[in-house]
Length: 360
Image (cartoon, rainbow, N blue to C red; front, side):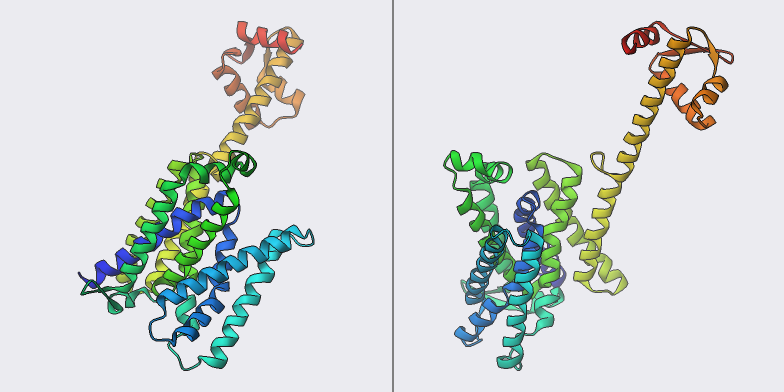
């Protein structure tokens, strides 16, 4: 297997594993908890590194990170339920505290060990082909083995509990009344998020895994409100940006992880601009249509009360409209069949007379 293929597959697996969980985090308005977990798991990794002796710390690191991830979620919820701080403030308190503890432990006890902060934060996906692990007598890239396992685990979890996750995401009270244990699902989701985060540390770093968890689902949410479609779009965006980001980075000799994250950001802003649901352009168009509709109805009501034909200049003077406003209102009314025009004279049509009676 070529090094290029290993790097691209690693990025794609991280994208799929992160997006599968990220969709439910975004819908539950818990996006930033992934950022908190990605940083606060550091003490768990350090503890696992210490207990394992530092030789083969992958599995202990996953367990330690999952434990710290759950501790982060519980600590945030305890602070929020106390009523003294909001959710964002609780996250802002918990994760810097735990992350700083991890930083202090590394700087004091493991400063000469193979556990540096740059690798945790930024990662280096270009090294993925060189880190091998033995599986059934075959030496395989560790990143593919680890992220492939986590991707299958996340996919199995989402596939098996899709109905329960959907119900507990949109109506936790109803899910509890039906016996779906939304609390257990919540902590299972957070445990898998912790596993996925620490599993992706060495390959892509904390920053890119947070981007994969949040940005593709947030972009998909701008395009659809259907959960299954949102899942499909999230996976597609993550995989496409992974492949495109790698080749663009190679073309311009830039950081692969940085280019992938940049493309994810670019896709989000394109969705924000062009989405037919909540996009900026669509919103501006709908507001303009609403203004034209109100002005056109005002125009028809004026002709009804006037009881005769009139020119557009007379209407514009009456309502103090600009020529552009008058033209748009007139165009909208004619398009709806409310008014007709003969030369410079505008008059009501039978549907327009009906509207006038209705508004009277």
